[in-house]
Amino acid sequence: MNIKKISLGVAVSVALVTSSVAMANTKATTGIVVGGQLGYSFLDSYPDKFFAGTKSLKKEHFAWGLYAGYDYAFSDVMKAGLELGYDSDGVAKYGSDGKINISEISLMLTGAYVDPTGFNVFGKLGATRVTEDFKDSSIVTSDLDEIAPKIVVGVGYEVMDNLNVYVSYGHIFAKGKSYLQGTPPSDKKLDKPQSNDRIMAGVSYTIPME
Image (tube, rainbow, N blue to C red; front, side, top):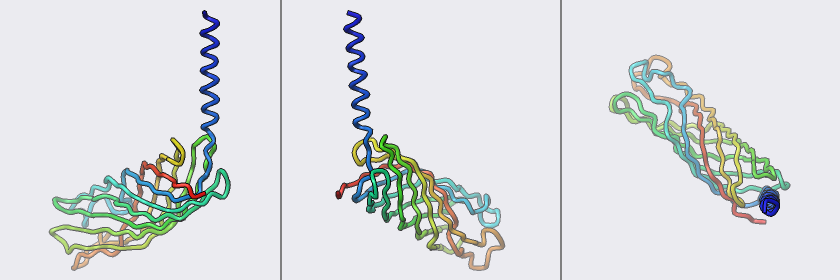
């Protein structure tokens, strides 16, 4: 009886291992990629005190994004592509009624290494148009726009064929120098958006075209 149980256990174990090995054959895929992500965005170049220290600024805020693109697999483990995305980097709040609505439209070159086990690492490099929309009853409403470099790095895992889950870190290299770091001009208008960091979790799906 014990021998039968042991034999059964060994058989089940072998079957599970064989199945895992068979499934662990992930390859880079050529095709159309669509995805979405959620996370947090952090303004990183505004001072801790807003408007010459008169109003505190909440720099951390909820963010989300959607994107679509095309990947080309150069080999079973390497792929590269082009991606267009829209991101809402949230609403930073300051004072009693101040809000900064932050959004961006990005065009990115992408590259990834896909391990046969399903794990992957990726990077993105490109440009984004950042918009910061200021609304405050005490100042003139300002819309700030700037095209700035952007990078993203991340790690993911393909949970099923062509469906990838991941976490990523991104940074926008905006160099806005506003009156927030000095004496406000009389019209109280800003000049450029500020740099931004993001930590995101997302999911993407590749529609094969091979």
